Length: 184
Ligand SMILES: CC(C)(COP(=O)(O)OP(=O)(O)OC[C@H]1O[C@@H](n2cnc3c(N)ncnc32)[C@H](O)[C@@H]1OP(=O)(O)O)[C@@H](O)C(=O)NCCC(=O)NCCS
Image 1 (cartoon, rainbow, N blue to C red):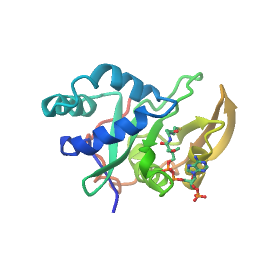
Image 2: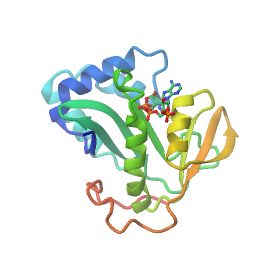
Image 3: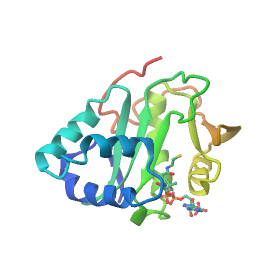
Image 4: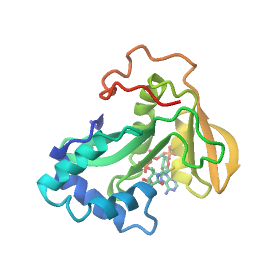
């Protein structure tokens, strides 16, 4: 059964396969483009990959989770810590991607549903999730977890997901591996 975990160097081989799949797509997301520029030359090597994982874990601006099943890396999801986003923010609080070979099996929906309690525990409530107007798959994912459409801005649909204003009281504790407070 798939689960959300902290980034872990044990998934080296499967992670690299997944990144090759992502990199073969026409559109590279911002995170992947940056990572390919900064780490692709070194992450093939186990020591280089361990350094990459450390870099992700040490990122104070966001929490990144990997979605894995057995030894297989399926996708990843990132919660940005900033509770208050600038008005011109297009990316929202949460970004995610599922490797092309694992799509349309409910994984993005499972990942987003799984990290929302952690975002609420970080004090991010409601959560802004955006997607390109043409990204039907992502739109369905956001709607499946209760996202309410605010409207469109800059080519992005903006959805808000509310947690009811209350923390989950430890319900997300298995995910709270960083135990950080979000920035304002
Ligand atoms: C968008 C993305 C995350 C969807 O991942 P996924 O694991 O395939 O999504 P799910 O399997 O949970 O699918 C949820 C719904 O969307 C539908 N769907 C998924 N991809 C679709 C597509 N390309 N076109 C139309 N519908 C699609 C699924 O059939 C499912 O519909 P259902 O609830 O009616 O059965 C994945 O395609 C991806 O990583 N894309 C590249 C990165 C990206 O766009 N990230 C999102 C940034 S906002």
